[in-house]
Image 1 (tube, rainbow over the protein chains, first blue to last red):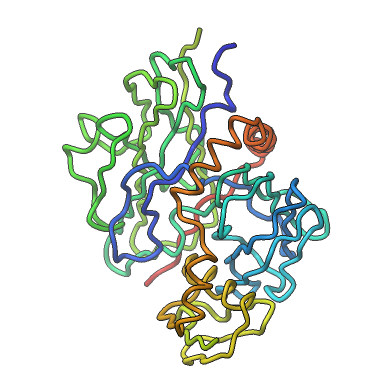
Image 2: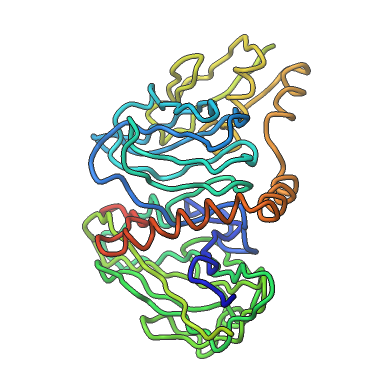
Length: 250
Length: 112
C-alpha cells in the first residue's frame, strides 16, 4: 500500500503561544492539530464521541458575536451529544482541549447535529487555531512566528523527494520556511522573534516558494515555521492558510 | 473541597456545569469532585489562572488531567486497533471537501 494523503498529517508544535510571552515552536505535539473547519455562521457547539465510555471533560474557547472571548468546560457524554449550552452562540472557535485521550473519535460540530468543525481522532487531545490573538502595530510591520509539523504516519514507507508548498493564502499574510532538519525541537524566543538561522532550511528565507526537504521516513516529521506578517494598522483577518506536501511513494 | 481561582483576564467569562465566572474577581468555591475536575480541565487549557487547591482538591485535580505521555500511549493503542485511522480518515475527507471553500485557521487582530 502506498502512502496515502490522509497519512500525511499536520500537527502542532509543543508551544503554540497566544501571547507574545513564552517560547514558540519546539518538538512535535502529536496530540494536537492546527487545522479545522471554522463555523460558517454563528451557532452553538456540541461534541460527541464514537465510544460510549468517553466521559472526560473538554474545554472550548471561542469568540461570541460581539468578539468577546468565551470559554466553557463540559463533560463528554459518550455517544450522546453534549452541547456547550452556557458558552452561548459563538462566531468562531479558537481552541478545543480534552482532559484525557478519548477512546473514540470525538466530533466537534454545530449544534444540533450540524456541520463538523473537526474530528479529534482517538488518542488525541484537541485542536487550536494558530496565529490567534495577534495584533498589528500602529507604526510598523509586525511579524509572528509559529511552527507546525508535517508527519508521515505511514508505518513502513518513506516519502521520497518531498516538497513543502503553500497551497493557498487568500489574504497574503503568511509565508513558510521548513526547519533545518527532520524531527527537530528548535524554538524561537517568543512568537514575535524569528527562529535562529541555524534552525531553518537554507537559505533561511520566509516566502511562498516550494521548499524541497529530505525524505520523510516512516513516522518522521518535518517542522515548518509559518510567519504571519501584519502591515502597519492592518485590518482584522479571519482567514485560511493551506499548507501542502508532495512527494513520491512506492 | 476549597478551590480559589481567577478567570484569565482576556476572557469575558468561563462557564461550566457549576456556574458562570467572570474575570477580575478572585473566586473561592466549595467544590465537589466533578467541579474540581472541571476547574482543573479549564486550568490545563488556560482559561483559568492562579488556581489554588486545598489538600483534598489537589489530589482530585491531579487525577483530572492525563499527562501527554499517558495520552501518547493511548494514541499508539488507538492506532494499533484502527480507531485512530478511522477518525483520521474521516477528518481527511472533511479537509478535502473544505479546501474548495477555504478553511479558517488563522485569526489576526486589528491595530494595537
